[in-house]
Image (cartoon, rainbow, N blue to C red; front, side):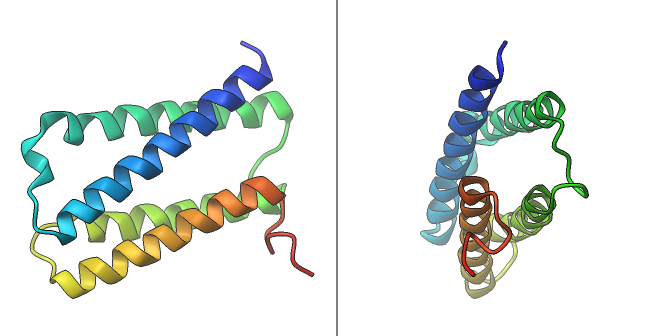
Length: 127
C-alpha cells in the first residue's frame, strides 16, 4: 500500500477511535452499562490496533520518528496521557466526578493530538 492509503486508514481509525471513546465515556457518565454490548468491548481494541499499526507504518515509510521529530514526540506523550485518562474515565468503581474530569481531560488530550497532527507543531502553530 502507498503512503496516502495508509494515511487515510490512520485518519479513519483515529476518527473511529475518538468517536467510540466519546460514546463509551458519555454512556459511562450517564450510568448506561455500555459493557453489555459485546461489540463495544471488542471493536475499540481492534480499531486501536489498526490505528497503531498504521501509525508505525507511516513513521517507517516517512522516516519520521518520535524522539527525532518533536511533533511526533508530543503526539506520543499526549497519547500516553489520553490512554491513562481514558482508562480512568471508563473504569468502574471510580466516582462520577473523577470519571467526568478524566473524560474531559482525555478529550482535551486527544484534541491536542489531532491539532499537533494537523499542524505538525508542538505549539499547534502558535508563535
